[in-house]
Image (cartoon, rainbow, N blue to C red):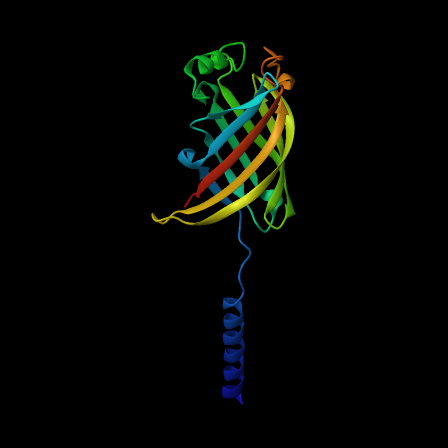
Length: 197
């Protein structure tokens, strides 16, 4: 009888261990550092109300936390140096860096920091946060699409998201040449992050 009890107890312990091995734990929040070579910040605005002009900012930096099971634990912080503005026309770029526009000397950083993240669809998230430009901060809410994830050839795990949204540059005090350059600026931000080990 005593041997039977030990065998039954052992069987129960083994069953619990085996059952536990088949349970997939919920993924925890993961932190990613932005890959600046594969993160893009592109802007578009209209010239003379006729055609769109495009530009970009090189060298963005930042990080994001992604918690797939609890999106509210997710967050992102990204910044770029205004002096890295690039429209493929040197004369125009120099003007954009001046106090007439980005005032890169006085206000070098353009920053976004999230305040909340909510899941809005199978692969989409609603991100609210604060955008700082020319020293002025305005709240914005964007819809971000999870574009993919996976391991790279070097053993790192990568995660990608993209969003497009429109701001008015005049809301940040950038109101020079309003009749020539449009007020509405479409921003497309595509981020690729490398998970920290």
